Length: 76
Image (cartoon, rainbow, N blue to C red):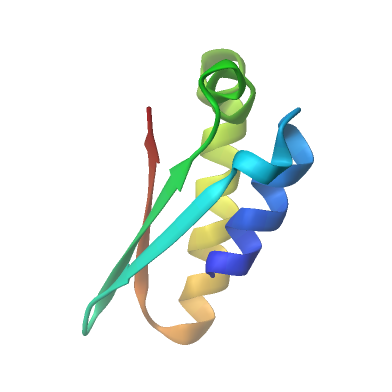
């Protein structure tokens, strides 16, 4: 899951070397924290949050196969 978010985020931003993805795994759920450069945060979130929502939708579909809940947090 971590690699999936990293690939999507790097495709959206201008500074892909500053994308950091950290996965905090639990027994039944995981939290994925996404950090980018300050000027790229808007590109990751998108207009009205559409990019962020699309990333969360893809992540939920992929995690459903693993029967695990995954939450994406975009950190400023």
